[in-house]
Structure formats: C-alpha cells, structure tokens
Image (cartoon, rainbow, N blue to C red; front, side, top):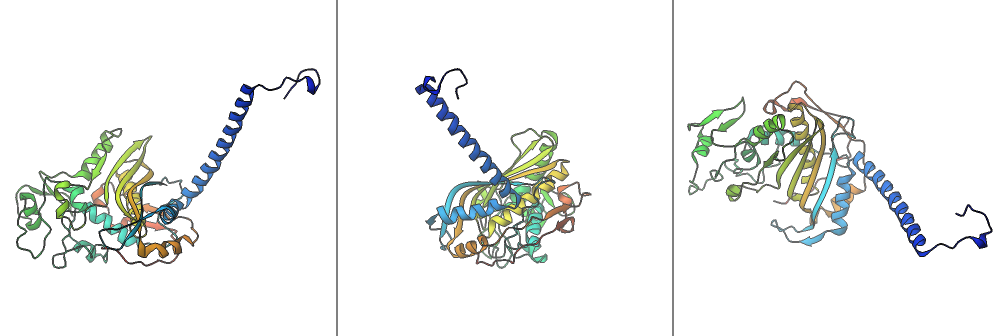
Length: 354
C-alpha cells in the first residue's frame, strides 16, 4: 500500500523482488493456517483415541495385499506411529470405546508377564484364554516368551515343554525353573523366582529410572535371538523404552508385527497401563505412550469388521485408577486397578489367526 503523496498513477510499480517477497509471505500465511488447523485436528484425535481409527483407515486405504505365516492373508503397511496422552489432566485411559475390550484379559496378561511366567496355567486359573491357541496342549508351556525374557533373560533357555522326549537340552537355570530344586535360584517376593545369573530387566530398568532418569538405556527387550526358535510365538512387541522429563514418565514400544484389529487395542491398553504402574512405583507422573509399528496389518477376514468399527462414533474415554498404596511393581494385583466411566459400543468378534 502507498502512503506517500501523489496520484495512483505516480505510485512506483512493484519490482520483481517485491513480488517474490509478497508471494512467499502469502504462502507462509497459508502454511501457518494449515498448520494450526492440523494441530487442532490432532488435539481432537488425541481426545478420544481417534489415532487408532486413523490407523484402520490408513491400512484399509493404503495397505498392500501380502501373504503371511498363518495363510490368512493381510493388507499391510510398513511403519506408522501413534501417541497417547496418559496425563491425569489428559483425555483419559486409551481403552477403545468403538468396541468393548475385555479388560480382565488385558490386566491379567500384563500381571502374567510381570510374574516372569511362560505357562498359561496362571491365565487359565483367572479365566483368561487369549494364549491357549499357542500353548502346548499337554503341558500349557509356551517356551521362553515375554515374561521369561522380561524377568529372567539368560544366554539360552530350555526348549518348549512337550511330550517330545528329544527336547532335553536345558541350562542349569531352566532345570531349576522346571523343578524348583536347582541351586542358584532364589525366591524374589511372594510370586516370583529369579536366577542368580539371569537378568531381571524390569527390576533393572526401574532401578535405573530411579537413579539415572536421564539415561538413554531405559530399555526392556523380549527379542532374545538365542531363544526365538524355542518360543511358541516370537515376540510381536519386541522392545520398549522409557523416557523421563520434568518428573514425567513416557514409554515407547516398537512392535515388529501388529494385528491391528484384534491385537493392537490390547497392546495400547497394556503398555499404557504398564506406564502408569512404573510411573507410580518410581514416584513420577505418567506422560505419554508412543506406539511405533513395523508391519501393521489387517487380516483379510477382518476388513469388514474394521469398517463396522469405523462406522461407530467414539465416546469419552474412561479413567484408570491404581491403588496408590502399591510401591513395588511385584505387588500389583488385579484388585489394584479400577476402571471408571467405561461406556463402549458392543464387542465385535473376529477370528484369530494362529
């Protein structure tokens, strides 16, 4: 705009440089406008776990058909991430509302992991059957799966128990794990057993969070290469890392293989709950759960189920309350968790690929 004296015809015409600057400013305004609109959308997404529904849409629209181990076939993408705010003033606990999830199974499975278990007996005793399809039908053993690696990582473990008498290679620790009679195994609390030469990753990472919160090594891994062939199912959620900042605890999970319809909703809730638990025993506030995916897929026989779920409106999230008296990760019991205000749509049943 010209503010000097003279007529419009006497106004100096803009140079090419002025036009370029003006164009850049115009484009920057558009970018800023788009950014803030996008930011508002993200806030809305985070408020009711719409990130999960965006993942459903992403795989349905962009996924490529792939063969898989189960023979079912999938629609898959490689590489995605979602973030969930776990702060007390945040949107709530990320338990999906567009279909009802079985919280009992989620809690008991997490407690089972933390016990260091490798047999489904504990789950079955508590009316949880989600691992039955992979367990040995006679012994209930799964091999050295998640809990075993979390609480007793050793160089090698005994093979999965079965009726096959040829499976005889066992380390000293694992013989004791089976019989409870070997030396070098010490009870650690009312429900757990530890090896003197095994690594309790959970206890170690909690101690490290308390004493060295700025560490970049706050990691727990389930991917024990020496044990993979002895597992009924190699770990899908491979490793997780904690991060402490300003008195808040965040957790990021890397999941190599993610069954988006059946498995991922459980994984989101389970690791969010683990973050709350670790934050409490470390006297920190929960911040975020970050979920990073490798092969993210919908099975071909879940596609219509996913579309049905997307047709439903998201409802306000519930709140998860932990018993504040629990100060040790090993002391949590099922009764120490209270879910408040969960009002989901009905469950959507779908076949599991084994």
